[in-house]
Every structure is written in structure tokens, then in C-alpha cells.
Image 1 (cartoon, one colour):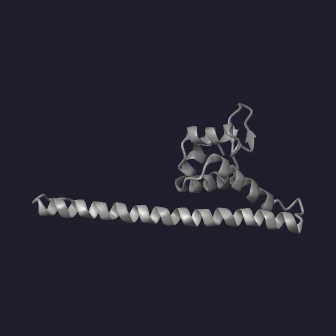
Image 2 (spheres, one colour):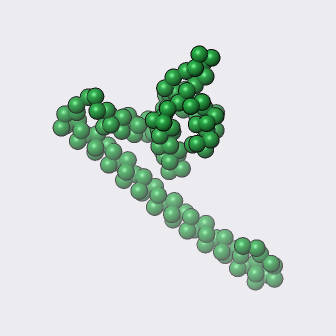
Image 3 (tube, helix red, strand yellow):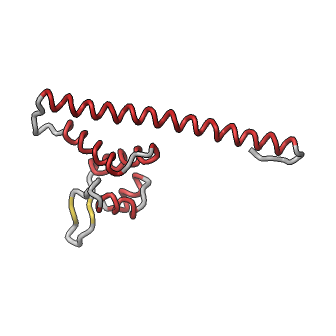
Length: 133
């Protein structure tokens, strides 16, 4: 699929998708004869991983590391030794733990923001305003 369809499906901008190509996170699987980027479902899945990591504050390097780990674990053409598999799984589990911790931090921030909004609403009501929810 062309980059426009990928952008619509992932809700990422064309510029962002091109940037991820430039930094090597998600390269298009092919190019058309005219040089246009062509993406597969697997490419879209990789972009979705990145899109989900971004709000959690993961860096581009961390995104690349996670993608490398999952690529290696998913590579059925190469048999992994026990030690390598355990090392990769350990790295994957560290990402999982980091994601859980970051989600909890976001929940805390959201709770505080909601308390703030509710406080503003109460203040507006007390001051005789007609705050709209």
C-alpha cells in the first residue's frame, strides 16, 4: 500500500512515516517503479508498535531496540539458542515492565488533570458562572 493509506490507517502523518524510514525504524518493503514507498501489513504493524510506544515516552533508540528484539524472536528462519532466547525474552520483559510503569504514571497524571478540571468547574459554579461540562 502507498504511504497515504498507511498514514490513514495508523493515524501518523506522512512526515512522521518518512522520518521513521529515514532513521531506519520502519523501512518500506518495496518501492514502486516511480520510486514511491510501498508498505505491507507487517510494516503497518511495526508502525503501530511505534505509535503505541510514543505516548509512553520511549525514545527512537528504544523503539528500534524493541523492534529488533521482536524481529529476532519472530524470525522463524533462524533457530535461536536457549541463551539467546532467554536474553531476548529478558529484554522484552524489561520493555513490558517499563510500559506498565509508564502507563501507571500517565494514569496518575490523568487523575490529577481530572481533579484540576473538576476544581475549576466547582470554582466557576461557586463564582456564579455557568460552566459547561
